[in-house]
Image (cartoon, rainbow, N blue to C red; front, side, top):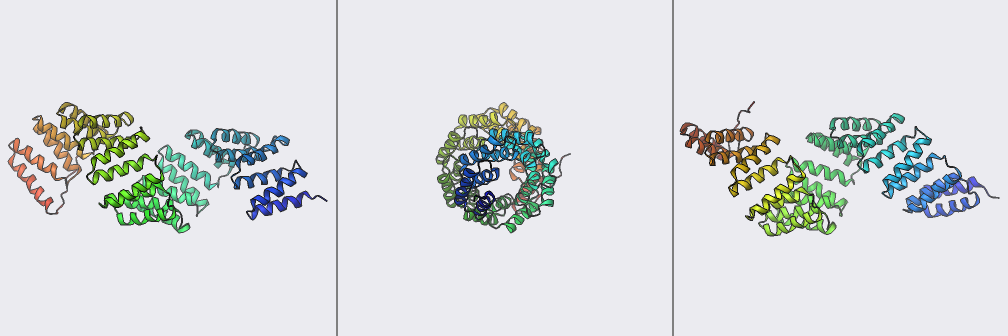
Length: 453
C-alpha cells in the first residue's frame, strides 16, 4: 500500500545525508503517485538547487503554484533560484508576490532588498531591509545587509551601528565582524579593524578574505612584512584570487623587490586577462624598474580593457611626462578630470605639465583648483610657489613655500626654494634661518612648524 508520508520521509532522509540524486528519484516517484504533495515539490526543488539544476528547481516550485496559486513559499523559493541565475528583476517580482500574499514574510523582504542592492537600487534595498527588521528584529543578516546599504550611502557610523546590532544577536557572525572591520578601516581606525579581522580568522582560519583585509591594513600602516605574510596566506587559501596577487605585488614594489612584484602581476594577468587593475599594477612595476615604454604598453592595455579607469589614464599621464611627451600627458590628465572633476592630484600634475610647457597661467589655474579641492595638499602649494617665483611674484612664492612646510614640516625642497626666494627679496637673515633648518633635517632632526589658522 502506498504511504505518502513514508516516501516523503525517505526523500528527506536522502536530502539530509546530501544524497541529492537519490532524493530526487524518490521524490519524483512520490510526485507521480501524489501529484499535489507540495512538500515533495519543495524538497525536490531544494535538491535540484544543491546539484545546480536550477531550471528543474524552478519547474518544481512552479508546479506547486499550478495547484496552489497562493503558496507564498513557492514564489519565495522561485525568487531565490532566479537570484542564483543572476536574474534579479525576475527575483524581485517573485519576492513581491510572496510579500503580497504574506506581508510579514521577513525573508522575502530581505531577499528582495538583496536583489535591489545588486541592481544598484540602494534606496529600494534600504526600505526592504527596514521591513525585514520590522518583521524580525533579531535577524542578524538583515542588519549586515542594511549596514552595506549605509556604506553605499557613505553613512559609516550608521553601518557600524548595524554591524554592532548583528553581532549582538549573532556573536560569531563572520560577515558582521568582517564588514565592521571594513567600516572601521574607512574611519582609519586600523587597530580596531585588525581586531575584527583577527576575530574572523579565529572563527574560520580558512577565510582568505580576512587575510586580504588584514593585509591591506598592514600595507597602509607600512607593516610590509606582515602584509606579505597575510597576502601569501590568502593566496595559499585561494590560489586563483587575482586581488591577492595584485596586492602582494604592490607590497613587493614598495620593498623594491620589483622582479617578485612583476611575477605576481603576471600571474594576476594569467588568471584574469581582462583585469585592467593587473595591467596597471604591472605597468607601475615596470615604471619603477626603469622601463617606461613597457609601462606605457600596460597602461594602454588597461585603457583598452576599461576606458573609464581613471587610474590607467593617470598613470599613462605620468609615463608620458617621464618620456617627455607633454601634450599626450596633458591629454591623459584632462581625461581623468572628465571622469572625476574633483581630483586634486590630477589638477596638480596637469599643472606640472603646463609648467614644463611654459603655460604658466594655465599652471596657476590648475594649482588653484587643486588647492581649492584639497587645501592640505602640500605639493600643490609648493608647485604654485615655484610658478609664482618664475613670474617674479616673490612674496606670493614665499607664502606658498611657507604653507608647504606648515603642511609638510620635513619637506626640504620647500625650505631650499624659500631660502632662494628670501635672498631674491633681500631678506638674508630669513634665508639663513632656512639653511639652518635644512642642515638639521639632513642630519636627521625633525622640524615642527605651527599650523596656520
